[in-house]
Length: 74
Image 1: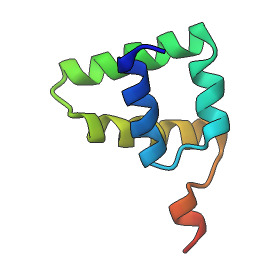
Image 2: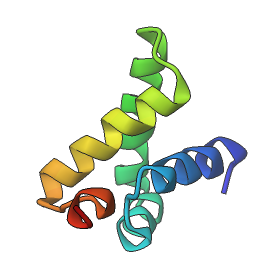
Image 3: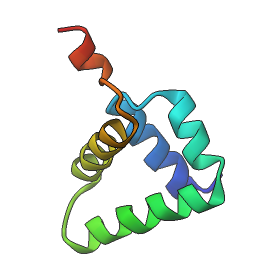
Image 4: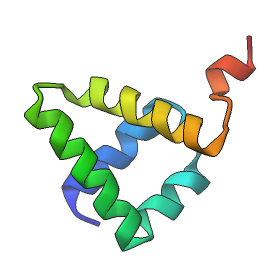
């Protein structure tokens, strides 16, 4: 896995995206391409790594109808 992808994987884990979901995304070239395209577009808009990871993690949770760990504990 490229260093860029490892960093993105870890940043998304920091925002509680489940490992199984990330493994599916990073294990499928089409899904990984979509993720990287979105991530790079946010970089071009001036967003930073943690802001990007937060935004993308929220999209993943919404699209998969997942309640983030931090919200489930409340």
